[in-house]
Structure formats: structure tokens, C-alpha cells
Length: 221
Image 1 (cartoon, rainbow, N blue to C red):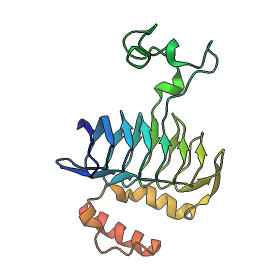
Image 2: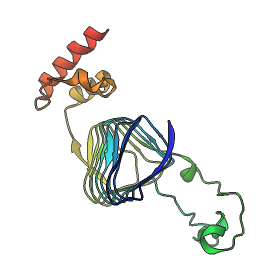
Image 3: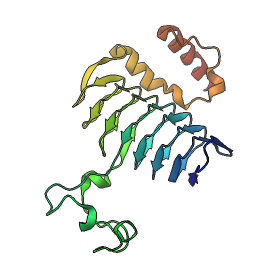
Image 4: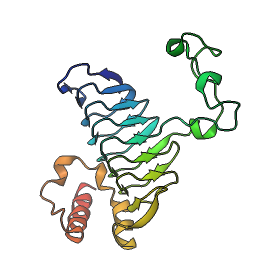
């Protein structure tokens, strides 16, 4: 469902169908959402697709990004921000964007006129991804399922599934699990199950959790 929701109040606003919790002064602009999402105070999602059970902290900006299920973004996070062309005459947007409403005059009419692969390619965030506070994910980057982006990281290249990346520029610190467990997690795709079907699983112990997930998936056919 594509929606535009703006909370101009100092308190959270909850919309029931689809379920959206909007913090104070937060925005969803032309976003395709499944519901069951939470947006922290002062955060903005612009032209994104947001899957269930994903949320963001305060004062974050996310644009033109495809976001999977069970994702957690921290506060002051930037994902998919627009790239200015550096080989044009100027870095200013007057060259390719209609800025009549911003500066009172413009050279371009009808939105944005820019041919740039990096700006046209959406950013992709897999399922079960955690992006820490103050991190930046460049436009067009893909972050694999289960990955973790450490606090204040600057991500300019794709991140493999279940990897932990840190630093500026970001580097892979380690993988969360062994190759065998990662392969099984990617095969089971537990995030596609209904939340009620995950009840009672011992999430603290990965081997036991995987065993129970395999059993429940088999029972579901």
C-alpha cells in the first residue's frame, strides 16, 4: 500500500490499518508499506518500500530504498541519500532539479532531470538487518540478510549476508555465524513466517532455534 503520512504533533500517532507508529514530526512520503512498522521522532522515509516489523530511531533519513522484514535502524542514520554529480560544472542541484519552490527560480521544470546510474539504482536492505546509530549507507548499495552495520560506519560497497561491517570506509569485521549456519539461515528464510509461528523458540541458542524452525517449516509444508 503506497501512503503519505505526516505527523505534525508532538506525540506519537498510531494508524491501525496498516499498523504504523509515527513519532513526533516524522514522515512517510510516497512509501509502499506492508504495515507493522515504527518511525522514530523526526525521521523521514521517502519513496521507500518497507516490509513488516521494521523500524527506525530518531532523526534518520531513508530514501529510494527497498527494506526487508525485521530490520532495525538506529538514530541519525542516512540511507540512500541523493548523489551529486561531481564531474558536472557545479555540484549544485540547479543544473538538474526543479528548484522553483526552494529558491524562487529554476532552469529545469518537471522534477529531476538527471541521467546517473548511481542515482537511479535503489538501495537494498535485506531481511533482519541492523544499522547502528550515526551510520551512512550510500545510494545503490545492497546489504545482505542478517548483516550488521556498526555505529558510525560509512558503507559504500555491498555487504554480504550475516556480515558485521564497521569503520569509515566500512570493512568486514567478521561473520555472525559459521558458513554452514549462514547457508541454513538463508535457506530457511525464517523472516517469511508469521510472527505467531515463531512463538516458543529459544532464540538465544542458534542450533536449537534452527532445529525448531526446520521442524515448523516441514509441518507447514
